[in-house]
Image (cartoon, rainbow, N blue to C red; front, side, top):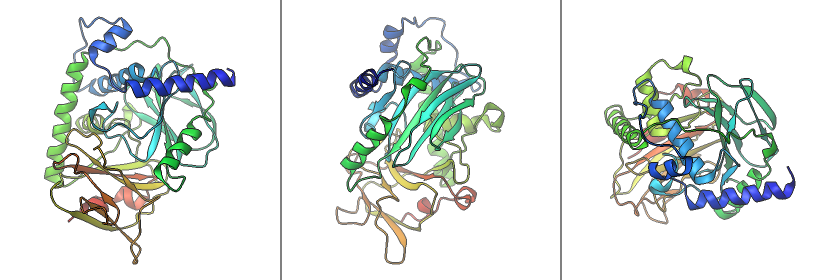
Length: 360
């Protein structure tokens, strides 16, 4: 593929992703020719597959990710315009939906100057690999004809967010897309996506109930079907945080949801830096698990550290407050998710998240 063609594909992906990050069921049926008759019944056994199909649908309709490398050139959209719930606010995304050949997939990770990873997600919803090493990788995948590659490109470089975003886009554009065997002939399974949405919302409410009872909800993200030990837990994870990586020490990530936090009063949390391998972040979400307008994540690349080396993050405490996250545009109670990228063993083993536990 020539350089000009690759640049054209990237440009097309930017336009299409920005113009339509999400799609209705009718939009998808119109674009695929699929008729919504004799739909597949959604059960506990196939919920993860149906939610994964919904993600395929969103990124095919919004970015033609089964035909080209779909780069999201800005931080994720706020509210339900986002293609996926609980998207992180610390990296830009690039998506490619590719075929497995002889049970394997091939992709490229260029040399970059920022955090840069590829997660290999199967049609069963499992993030089978999270790869951070440079080079061309060919990996076996389990029980899937295609994979959904999630590229994450960190915005930590540069003195401000605009510079970090520009750099993150530049790193994504280094990806050698000739290595992708795009799944141009992929056909969506015949789910009723309105029903999938309803099942997702029901399980997100169940997650809120668990957090209210236990104080946290921690994701495990088993890498293959054989590693699923609790199907209910696995389905809840897919509903509230699809596409997360398994908590593998110094490689994978640990994610934890908080209880609801008052949006009407100043709240803070002060904690010891967990010193994860890559970075740590705190992100606010609305009741539907979507990002909040104006509420930017705080992460360890840029947070201000206290004199005693602890870190304080503030919520709705004013512009002058240290590491302040402002959710006032939402105006309601909200939750946070902590992300520990390249989590330490101590973070993985901890029953309670040190950031969430210290909120007062």
